[in-house]
Image (cartoon, rainbow, N blue to C red; front, side, top):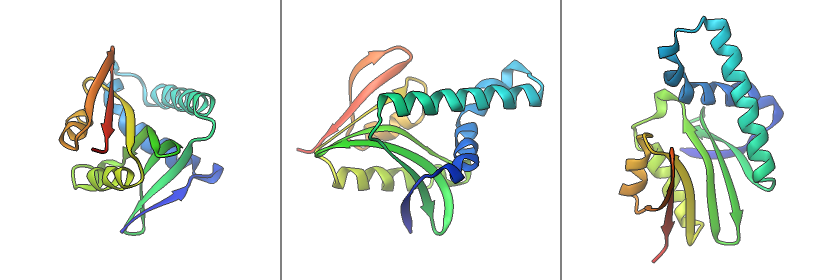
Length: 150
């Protein structure tokens, strides 16, 4: 069962773990000492959180729970029937099992338009295409994508 709950300050350790799981591979080639890498990831996490709160002050920050386990983090900014998918990430144990598709299908049920920004090299880009998202523009290294109800 897929459930979304409001993220709170008490969830920050979990939110960081989700963030870290999405960024770790980028930094492995740098051969940084683990302590230094952890500090860098914490700085980036805090900067990302501040940026999202600044750019999307009314956004919903949610914990994704699957079968009673915290599985991921999602940020959506909804205005009427339009949703901006600001951030979504699942922990590695929950990836490539159809949960991302289920989450996006739930969002599609609530909106007539969904927009998002994805890194050009992010494998999720293929999932978005498969689910009917089209590329609207490119702002290297990101692609702006949109789904619209027909």
